[in-house]
Image 1 (spheres, one colour):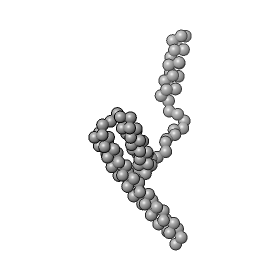
Image 2 (cartoon, helix red, strand yellow):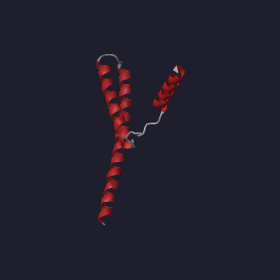
Image 3 (spheres, one colour):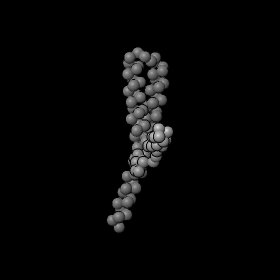
Image 4 (cartoon, rainbow, N blue to C red):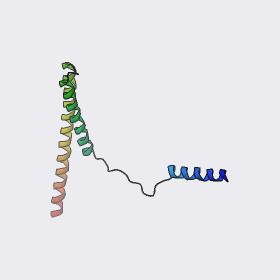
Length: 102
């Protein structure tokens, strides 16, 4: 009887752990634009942290300048790509609106 109860509890636990849920919720689909916006925020936060560390005296000038230049270049690239993608989206939206009027 005890062995039977142990088997039932084991089967129930395995089913609970490995059983498929009735509804599967997936996250929001990421676009390249949303990824770039998130990456921009990360780079800006890294720049703020770098500036704080430098002002606290934890970084020498050469390291600070090198890392700052690298992060600023990355931010510039990200901002340029965001602007390009937003321009493409605006152009296609304008074309869609003009196409609907005709």
